[in-house]
Every structure is written in structure tokens, then in C-alpha cells.
Length: 345
Image 1 (cartoon, rainbow, N blue to C red):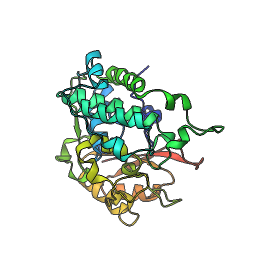
Image 2 (cartoon, rainbow, N blue to C red; image 1 turned 180 degrees about the vertical axis):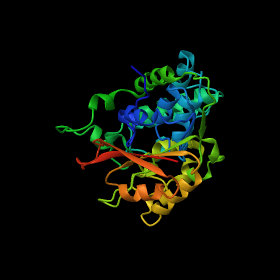
Image 3 (cartoon, rainbow, N blue to C red; image 1 turned 30 degrees about the vertical axis):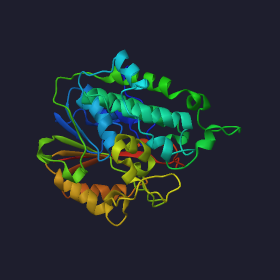
Image 4 (tube, rainbow, N blue to C red; image 1 turned 90 degrees about the horizontal axis):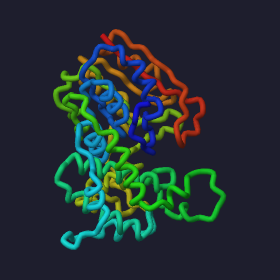
């Protein structure tokens, strides 16, 4: 049984990564670019299968995840490292940003205090890969202690409400951060291995990835734009707290102080704009037109299946579409399918 990194991240391909691999493993490629790497699970699976993987994501938190399990080939956190991270040290000055800013929003006062301490300790680790493993473990611990595993609402009260529950896991929410952190460190340590290839993690806007001709296959799993509700999976909005942790010293300048949940200031993205998303796909396919193009999307998304095929055929002569019935977490659309577009010359 293959060990895969677990995550509560919305839109993760963890449950269908083997299906994705089964549809691309016989294509002729050696270098693989995961252009919107997210949880890193697809790139990691391709790394397991001996390819040279480059994982890219515009979010620094996702870049760090890719650093920890894709670029990293040997560095793991020791018991001493974990003990250092989870203890207060008299020689270190600890900021109180999370405690001061997020009272009664996502975590308890004691949890906020511990988070300030842990983030500060992790930032004192000099080895970048050990630091990445630590941050990845902290991100996962933060996610499992959140209702719906998101940061889209101020809803700490849900953890303590005396109601009959049809969702969530109160035992998980009540488990201390330290215990979750140690468990995720062990899990991520077990995912660290060397496939003898030069794997890398990037933190670029997808259009700024250098040397596009270097990749035999480019896997594209962009934010999903729903044709039914005209809404988009905005990961910067869903996971701003993790992104804040990753940018701890700059966090104060990133917050929209008028928002109830203290999310980030809005930044325009072509992937969340109905009027620009078609041109965005065209620009991306043009950039990587020398590579095999593989696109993951949902059957109820924009562009539609027919439109996506048309866009790909501007650059590739052969486009096939694979379809898998799949129910997404928090999605009300039971008839939805995962689509995989495979475009070759």
C-alpha cells in the first residue's frame, strides 16, 4: 500500500490520484510539472513512480508543502527537533500576533498562544527542509481542528456548541495541537524519500514559471469555476490563516481588517473572473504547448467540457477526455464528475 500524505484540503486529488496516474502512466514523459500543486499529492505520486517532478503553487503555504515532500529527499524532524518546536525557550522573544488578532475567531486563547510560540520556534530552524516539514505538520494540525477544515467564517463556537452533530469530529477538535502536530510530523517524515531525481518546488504565478519547454508533461489543476453558481474555489480565501502562518512577519499587512473573519485583502485573479478564465486557459496552453497537457476539471465547471476540448485543440491535435464519478466534500451536486483532459501532438 502506497503511503500518501493525508490532508483535509478542499479539492485535494488524494482519493483519485491513482485513477489520474492510471490514465497518464503510459504517456511518454520523464519530467513532470504540477502547475497548481496544492496539497502536492499528485506530484508526490508521480515522484513515487520515478519521474522528475517540479511542483508549483502561487500560495506560499502550498509551496512549503511541496518543499517538504517533493523537493525534500532526506531531511526529517527528529524527536529533539519536535521537542524544540513545542517548548518555550527563554532566549527567544515570542510575538503575540495570533493571540492579539484572532481572539474567539478560529481557536481558543490557549491554542492561539501555542500557535504564536510554535510558529516562532519553527522560524528559528535553519534547515529549510526541516522547517518545511514542520510547517506542513502545523498546517495539517490547524486544518483538523477547524469546523469544515476551512477559515472562511468566524465559527469557533461550533466546536463547543451542545448540539446533535451531523458533521465534524469533536474528539479531533478537542485533541491538543501538540498531539496532532506530533502525529503529522511522523506521517510526513514517512513520506520523505529520495527517488534519485532533481525534484523542485516553485512559488510562482503559473504564467511566470520559467523554462516552460523543460517539461515533458504539464499537469493543470486550477481553481474550479462553477457554472451552476458562478462561484469559484478561492483557496487564498479558504486557507488565508495557513498562508498567514507561512508569511508570519508580513501577516499584519495582508489582512482585510474590515472582514469579520480577518481574511486577506482581495487580489484579482484571472482564475476567479468569469470574463477572463477562457483567455487564462488559452494563455496557459499556449505557454506549455510543447508539452503533453493534462487538465483536471469538474464536469459542471467553466469552461465546459466541449469548450475545454476546443481550447486544447488550438495547440494539440489529439485530445481525449476521461470521466470519473466523484462526490466532492461540501459539494451539493451529486451528479458531478471529475474530468481528465489529455492533450498530445
